Image 1 (cartoon, rainbow, N blue to C red):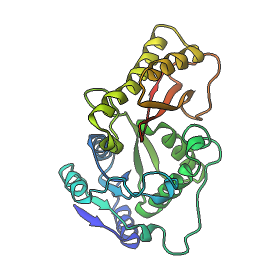
Image 2 (image 1 turned 45 degrees about the vertical axis):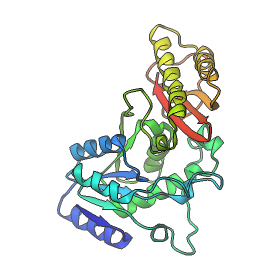
Image 3 (image 1 turned 180 degrees about the horizontal axis):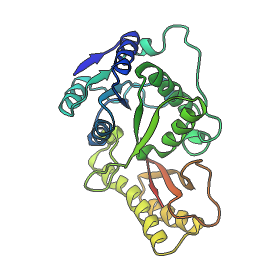
Length: 281
């Protein structure tokens, strides 16, 4: 496994691999890797000849009061995990390499990015689309793997790739969960044992919605009311949003859902820790 920190070196490598006819699979991450990330690597290995993992804590997707400075950075452990997983190349640039002095260009998706995370974190997706567009141009992947846990991010990036004619296939991998049902996330490291127990209500609320739809209850107001009620019983958990949206456009669904097309998306604060999760209904 080779670690690359230079944009020009990564671009040159990608060009050589493409000339050799190698299919490049990209797994973009912010590090602090867990089994969820490694499941994306496994899928990338199935769909490509060469796997590139990017490790970059992207400052432009964090708001001024968010956790950029304390976001976990464990590069040595991440590199060891990548090597054990059979990753071929890790691209781990410094911030100045991606955003050199005087940088002033951003990519903005105007529609799918507006609700949910976009409403509660206004600059978030501008940072996400910008850095992913840059990574697509730097690593030149044929396929890029993202996780369903970040459902809105997947929808935004898929639209961006289509609108800007990126020659890359976007593949979505299922959310990987801990044995207790908590969606795997680098931010789970912030949780105390007590907070973690409280956070489990997110998955319970989502599972309840799935069960309701399976039993024939497709009214959005009932699904949201039940999820909100369950979460509201936990004093450490504060709801940011509970919404049922179209899985492609992220538009709120009114009335009844069409099973398989809808997503229930939840964001909460567990004390000071912000968590998101979702399930396809």
